[in-house]
Image 1: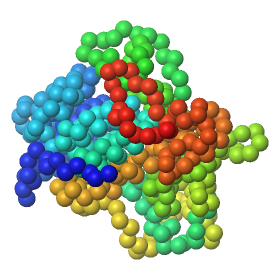
Image 2: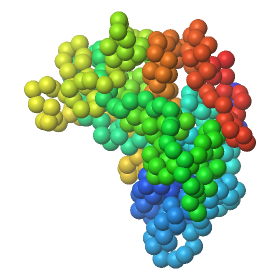
Image 3: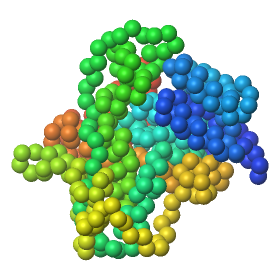
Length: 394
């Protein structure tokens, strides 16, 4: 399929001209991301949005303090920001169940997108986001700084052949999400609860959910499997050169068989959820292990191996800004983010159903398991929906 012509951002970027930005989802993590972008002299934040009014107010104060004025616009409806022609980019840090819808609408509106991880709630969302980014010629960067920033020692050591061919990997991250049974509480003033839920099934308000406590519940997130999993599994996939494909078999821990959730790839490499000896990541190769077991706190300087990573010289957020200007593909592209999140989602599905899954990473389908395939996408509460042409699970 031929991509549509790239939509030029609101302004042609001159050498000293700022890239304009709106922040959507201004909870603790969103305000942290916003402050990081405010440090860039070539970025100008024009507006912020959150369904919790107090979150938006705190974000607006940060922006106004940075620029010494009161010009930052505040809204509780993200669509008002996307309708503005003077906004080039959006930074999205909402709960996970909102990422896909806002990202897709933003890209269709001609905005480039920086979206916090986990970028998706389902496999179908990721494929839809990648397809829209290609069709509209948008730059999309996922928000995992750790895949390169924290784990590049492993990448360099493995790429230089220190442990030979990788055979097994342990990724020590949290558990899958589950059902939410929080009791109902009154909705306080300044909270648009219906909009916070958005495409998720309706349930009564509880304050923990708007304070970052949504991750244990699968209507809104994949739990530790997708939260730190997008960091840890993302780093492991990149180190092994498997970051643009996927496993062919996922086996949950069973009384007979796999003792840990186990991913097997077409080349025979196996990933395990949990365990290992090196903290979040442990690797076993044909000629050794990383980190070295004799002293995991001491790491030798890695060989001088160049591995393509961030562009522009200012970290992963600078990589996004550089790519907005140049129209290059960011290090954490939507395709890579989607493939990493898919890896995590498949693990959750295997846990939830308690049985092994056979996965076709080329067609992005679970083989011969209709019930499991239903988890690749989920019904959305009206009026919210995704493009219908993803083909996921078909």
